[in-house]
Image (cartoon, rainbow, N blue to C red):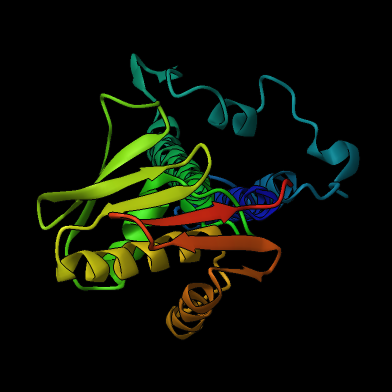
Length: 253
């Protein structure tokens, strides 16, 4: 978030500099057309840049002097019509103001987009350490592993933290996030394939440090010994009944 604030500051600084350049360019056009004197150009340029003027009292003009009248509002009338100097000065100033407003608007929009993007990334960023996973994290891991297409849908007949597991549109078991457990109903050889895919997904979602090779080795170790511990997370497997079960105990934060 501090990076986003710094980016906004830089964008606004660039917008301010662009505004100053446009205003000085407009003044130069007025000088080239003879609408203002060199002295007036230098003074206004110094005002824009925030530089103290060295002109002294000689820069002070009475309200009745010709140069003062040339700087009056564009509505100044000479002989019943708008003065030429006022018309010449109005257009560049109006264009400069429009360009400045556009630059500021673009800078603000870019800043908003940057902040929104950072917020979205922080929401979807995967936690670094071991943790109790969400159903979305398990589902994503399972689909990244390949094999069958996995969907987790909240169960209507069990606890609020229980999700039915569907693989290729067929319900094969459930996941309970209240105690981080997986249960696959054993009905055929395919049930073991489904169990391996989902068990690896649950383990990787709990511990993001596990890659595909590491999780396979850890699953084999857990099956051989009925349980295993990695990064403080305890895994236990029960293959003795008609259901294939994996339980995960994540240490408290």
